[in-house]
Image (cartoon, rainbow, N blue to C red; front, side, top):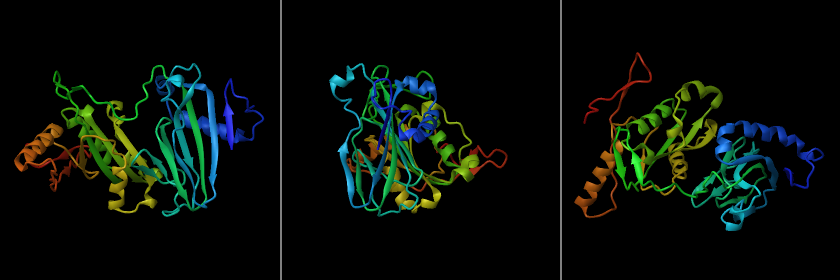
Length: 325
């Protein structure tokens, strides 16, 4: 079932039975500041909405893109094209084994859990896996132009990286670090993320993947009280689910790893972790030294991190024993 709107579309949105979805699409748009939509080249004149039902008889949707933006003809076109795909799932009875997951690229697999909302670039390859139970989804598409926004299918390789140390620049920085973090209703997660970026010598090479298991109505005050600057926030990838769907730490680490996107290094940590200053450079040097000593690049650094204490007078501050070491 389709509803299309826009100056050049042949459907009359006023007479279309999909009017019920217009308020919902308006709410979706409200989630994104107008300044952000403008920077991304999004236009309001074109929208499209799709309601999809997979009956549960093994139906699937083969790998595809929602736009042919990769075609030079479309890049030069004066007509807006799909830029971002938004999926909203309505499957209160869905359970693991029912199938119908969304697979984006090679590794990212997201279950169609009820009330889950997913946004991704329409240019990304994706598919719907075989569904063995009824699966409902509403898809919204944001349209825009190529001008003012560069479509990229993977993180850029940084040539110059500005350090947290004023005046220091690292040339030819190609190595990036992916931090994998599963989190279950942990108010320390926000502090962990902020500490990782603030104490890295080169924070613009750091990316984080978080599998966030929480109950928004109960956890919002304790788990979301810290303001993470946009320069850090846009390097954090989050897959979120209600805590009632938690499947344990092993599964959580697996989901966090699906957010990996070909970074050079992977760092697995807990959601309640603190860092030493220049931790990224220190770990990289330790790894390189170990590789040289062992004569092999198949090296893993592992340890049980030292604990820390929360300052009783200021919950935002912690005391790390022997931090200078």
